[in-house]
Structure formats: structure tokens, C-alpha cells
Image (cartoon, rainbow, N blue to C red):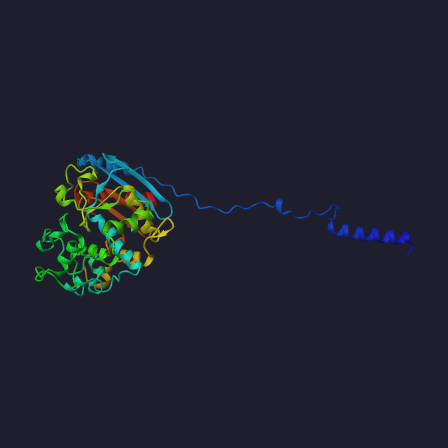
Length: 384
């Protein structure tokens, strides 16, 4: 082919390719550039507005009207951590308070941790784990911490003579547990297990002695490895305040969080001997809300939590009250709680994923009255 013709043919080919890439007006069609595309940001859920402004005045007025020395409240959320934390009167974040029966869910959790580790079957007879369990061969650990063991509870006589060792700070926990399980002085007063609800009493001291026996560790060591270390707690501990402080069912005068007033004991009270700050108790509530996790540590399994939170009293026998393992269960609204004789009230709303811990230093009735004023405002602040 003539070189000139070959050159013309190449030009025709080039112009043909340009025509494909051009618009009708001869302009070159733009080539899509990813950098020129508009970036569509995902729509984020707006942070919920939390208004706790109604809480302070309620507590402040209540403290004044009832001549209390103070109060503390912490509110925590499953996904957002601490939502609210405040104190009134003499209380501050450093205030260590005795919380009596608000110890129960913590004690029950130690037994459930031992169950998670395979050291204890909470639904098998205690007699399978310790020799002294043969004194009441049908009782299980689950029944002890759900107040349905059949042993005598706190009512009608809190100082029931055969179980008095539970209040003696110079006794030894495992020996006290064995005494309660093997005494024959209670034969006329006990019932079979899972027959009726009998709140509190020596059955909780049995639970603690059993935990020590199967683990080979002291109660203080169990508390440290179960809660204190994984959850970063700074104040939580157990003692027996009854004799050293002359404590009954009203907060002992003169105890302002001074732990030096509580001599060391080998017989801490399992159902009511715990002391703690609001912040540390709040961390325990968060663990219950966050599938048993404290940071990267699985403190309790989800199965253990389900057993603790569930209404065992309804599932196993006919009880007028709702109770799990260490937790009261409100059958009307699903709220679970663990109120103490000195007015502390922890509660969880598992459906909405939040919990709260209220502490005063007076009596159960006074604390429950204040909690009753706070349930709705706290829920409104968290959920509403």
C-alpha cells in the first residue's frame, strides 16, 4: 500500500475511536473518576438524650425530709457504661457502706462461677461435694441461694438458736456451715427442699462454706479472683458486722466507712456482710448486663446469669414471690432487685439494658420508699 494511503487509514482509525468517545457536539465524553464520586456517609443513630435533672431534687428532698446522712446513686447501661453517678449529704464516691442483703446476688455469683469452672454442680446434692452435706442429703446449692432449701430462714426468728454461728465473727465459715447442716435441733422446723420460700438465714452461710470447701480457697480469695481482679474493684469485701458494730436491722451508729472497726474474720456473713462503694457496685451491675464480662474477662457465663436472673421460684415450685438466685424477680414488670436491710437497692432492667444502685444508711423500708420514687424517673431518663 502507498505510504500516504497507509497514513490516511491510520488517521481514519484514530478519528473513528475518538468519535466513539465523544458526545454529539464533538466533546470528549468524560471518563468516570472514582475520586469525583460523592461519598455517601452512613446515617448514624443519634446519641440518645439523657436528662437526669429530675433525679437530684427527688433524692435531695428525701434525704432532708427523712433526716438521712446522705445517699448515693449510680445508673449504668449495657452499651454506654456509666450514665449517671452522684451523691448527697455526707456521701461521696469514696463512701464505703454496709449493704446487708444486697450481698446476696454477689454471693450467689461466686457459686455460679465455681459451677462454670466445673468445681460445683449447683443442681446436685451438697452431699455429693462434702461429707457434712449428708446432714440434709437432698439439698442442692441452687436451693441454698434461692431461699428454698427447706432450712429455717430469717423469719420468724432471725436469731434462730441452732444457726447462731452465722452471726459470730470469731467462728469459722466451714465449721459454721457444717454445724447448720448437721444439727438435729432444727428437725421440727425444717421442710423439704423446693417446697416453700424461706428468705435468708443459715442456708446462705452453708453456701459460703460449701464454696470454700470445693475450691480449697478462703471466701476472701474467692471474692478477689471472681470479682475484684477482673472487674477492677477497689473496695468490695465481706465481714461480719453484727457483734463488732452491734449491728441489727438499722444502720449501726458510728460506722462511717471506717473498715478498721471491723476486725478480720474467718466467718464473713454470706447474706449480709458485704461493704462497697457505689462505683464498685455499679461495675458488678455492668457485668450482669454485659453477658458476664468485665473487660476481656468472662466472670460469669451467660447460662449462669440466666439461672440467676430467672424466676426459679416460679419454675420449680409454687411460690407467691418471684426469686432467682440472689435476685428478687418482679413478675409484674420484670425488674430484678436485691434490696438490703440498711436501705440499699440495686436493680436491673434486662430488657432495656440498664441498672442502678441506690444506697442509703438507714433501714430497708426507707430505702425501698426512695427507690419507689426513682424507678420511673430513672427509666424515663434512660429509655424515654
